[in-house]
Length: 106
Image (cartoon, rainbow, N blue to C red; front, side):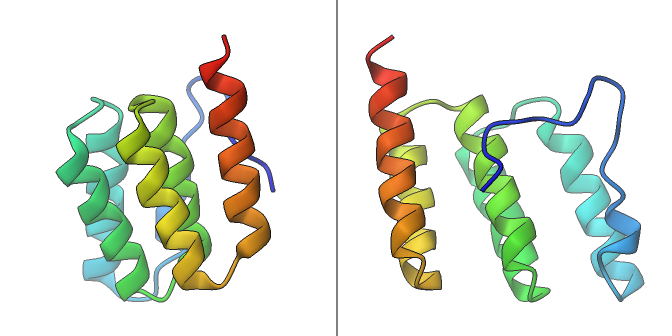
């Protein structure tokens, strides 16, 4: 699991290639731009829900990875862990807990 690594500076994720309908494609592109401004929790949660509605759990996971970098607070990490629990990814929950624990020691 490649965690906490943002794309290189100036490089954008091609959301157009990841979504099949134009409306989802445009919405995902807007959310990508919006998250560059580090919005509040509600925006990140809405972005995750969009990806899940598009049946893109890997993209939702990537959004959570960016979310916890932007908002390094327990609430964000708990949301990510609950998402992984719903996805049946027990190993990822343990991994998230270890990442959070390691980050809080600094």
